[in-house]
Image (cartoon, rainbow, N blue to C red; front, side, top):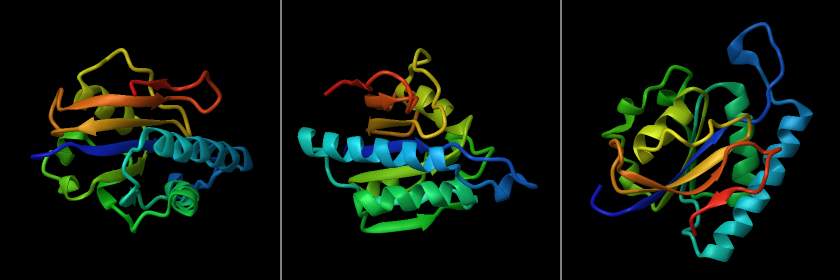
Length: 167
């Protein structure tokens, strides 16, 4: 990347049990927590003049699609689509040449452990708390290599204290 982009990594909301992992859907609590967080996120973007969300990418699993629909309804990105690379088992190294630099502000909705691992690697910061269901982290990214990003907002748990914010 030749310029910084905003990249938000968002873990799907709390999901219930199902016959298969792919069939798990958000619980009512999961839907409510994501809706509350996204409203606070939207207000933070306004207050800090962060670029509007241009793209929203999500794993093909049902719980990430439902989370993405909640985000989409509030943030109104120009583009929203499934990205198969975001399935469980994704690796930060899979995204080094991802094409994300085309977007001023992108959101990736995915799963653990990929999300927390990617945040720690790209920001080169092992002290950050892992994302609980519904949690998110906002990075200012120059490159998707170790240390190529800076955490500007970290809300690892929807039920925890207010987010860490560098801005």
